[in-house]
Length: 264
Figure 1: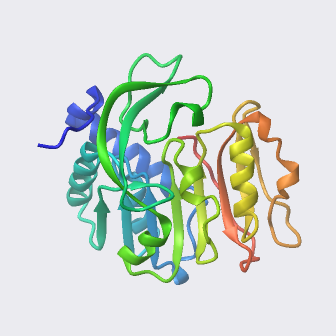
Figure 2: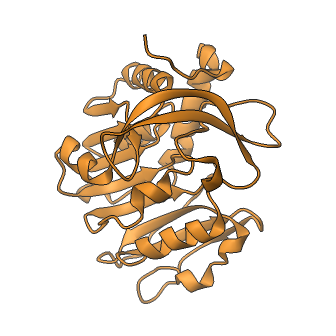
């Protein structure tokens, strides 16, 4: 039997359902989503309980794929998808990383101020990659990795219309130096040091415009200019203020975008 990480919140069915509903409602209203007329594929990397899978279908994606490193979270997400009556949704128990086919350790992480471990905070990264105020448990489960190139192959996609990434520090290895030209929207949450976040944002900035960023230390949402491409210059962002999440859009798209963000 597979050794799997379990948190107390995973064991209460009512808590799981309530969290899923809250996650889905917040995700539906975020500015991640392409126009329904050109929204076919949504890939959620870091599924947790599956709220974004529900949101992707609600916002018009015909094909939805999820990747989740935690076996327990995968099982819960599958349950939520089934109870919601969603079709054309596939979830894979794989950890996003820079290379495919490796066996890595997935462990619990939490901030020093947190009083308990949460199932949304599992990470395959080394402790030195995480912010200084984060600690990592000795508990772990083994999981197989997949890289971005093989996500395209496994899902049989030429283009990802919307990609959401929330993988507790593994986002840097997963996306840095990768070809992102066939991804239209990227909604990403950051869990690392400021210089690593800036380096990844500048890599994404080669093919994508920054449309929104939230800096945690000053509790500020940065929104785009109106002209010429409805975006935010990266040089305007002070990365030392802890960019917590951001939305990028392919530079081929120029029209204005409505953004409503709910803190996760």
